[in-house]
Amino acid sequence: MTPHLEARPGDYAETVLLPGDPLRAKWIAETFLDDVRQVNGIRNCLGFTGSVKGLAVSVQATGMGQPSTAIYAHELIHFYGVKTLIRVGTCGGIHPSVKLRDVILAQTASTDGAMNRIALAPFEFAPAADFGLLRAAADAAERHGVKAHVGGIVSSDLFYGPEDRYRVLTDHGVLGVEMEANTLYTVAARGGARALAICTMSDCLITGAALDAASRQSSLKEMIALALEVAAGLQA
Image (cartoon, rainbow, N blue to C red; front, side):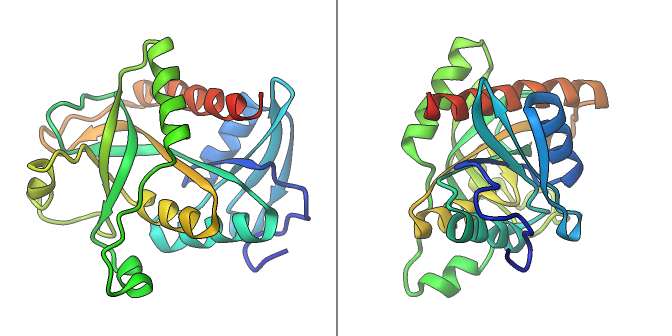
């Protein structure tokens, strides 16, 4: 047990999917996993373990933002022996090449947050996805006809802000913005684990276009199926 996870040793699989929203974690577990059991309920940040094609997989909500993600990723790695963490969530598009419903496989994750600056000074650490996970996800997306972009994203601590604040990043090829991947990649690197962020583009910060509820749910199903295929392939 930790301050944030009540699971017993062995309750989590070595591979964990990390949505931010606890209810999305519940939906993923009940929709995609067999033999599901809840393993965490502290602070209603729900965690579940089940199986896909007989292989153990867990789902753990992280909450929103980098500090919360850092806590859950650290505890999963260091207290429960988790080896692979796959973030599954939505992002805002900040590059014209990315369209609604497209998937971004985050090769790198920039940030406007200060966590790495504090921990790694005087260095500007450049956290990146695990290449094996990235390649497996890209290959799976190609097999299933999922429109996927491999490239950089930015994890921002600021949800509301000036509309043009990401323009300099767009000019440098950054594809989307979310709030968790940078610290996930950093904590995984520090703990010797593998990590990948897979994000569906649900709204465009350039045009203002956004998915309706039905389209968002359909896109999330495609993304989760892709993440679980990667997870199952690791253990096959």
